[in-house]
Length: 345
Image (cartoon, rainbow, N blue to C red; front, side):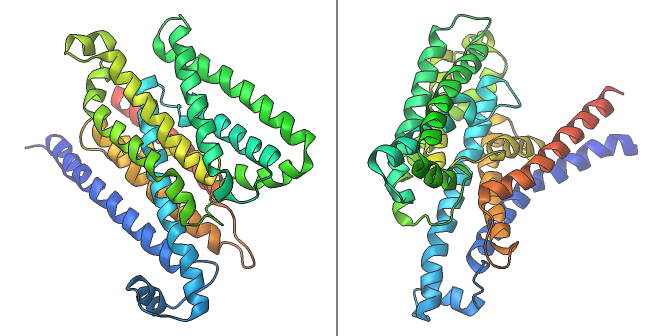
């Protein structure tokens, strides 16, 4: 057997090990998030806390913040990764992310409303408003897209999302510019952060995250058929309208819950699916699962690095993801282009 004939088999074996590596990276990110932070703690103290043993009061206070922060970052990273993969699959747009459905703009408008009208100051107070804003914006986008008659459904969705996002951004920007107090409070939300989020924030969005995951499980078996085109999928016995609606509802619910709880997050829903496509051994359902794994890992790693990069303070996870995500996405795009060029030779 020639070397050329052996190479595909070797590549396939190596590819099968990559999902296991991704899971290991996620586990490592969880450990790093628990053990490292701006306030150094002995590993023995961290382990004792996790076992439920009594530790020093100051260290216990640190862990009382670090554990909910790690859990929230994990579930929100998974949610955004899955939402990004579903959004790209259903819109057939490799550059799509959950913000395309107006979710981020809707959540921002809900938070602005909570701050300016009810004068809320804490993330736990305006999380529900951000969630409702994202859900309503996503529902309006889906409803408007069904009314727009253009070449295909994906184009209608993009147009509807652009329209609603522009309107909501104009509303929230007007309120923020006219109210200095709202501006001061809103800017801390809009950069995207896990800091200051306690367990109550997670409990507010947990039912919606669970609903989004259930919708994802229901939608995953249809993705490979839908990727062949609506006509082919219908010929294979799929209810195309129902499958698309379930998938897009999953995107809206997952992205709304994650955005409401921690603010606007860039690049994660875009980059995680691209990484997953390179290492997923199966079809699109495998890409969705790995997108969640990689989304959780990237979120926690970015948050941990943000805690350590400065001596006297920390960088929010939204800023760290922008710093890490932009070069990462450029590398992914360049390597994909080079691979296509090599395949054409």
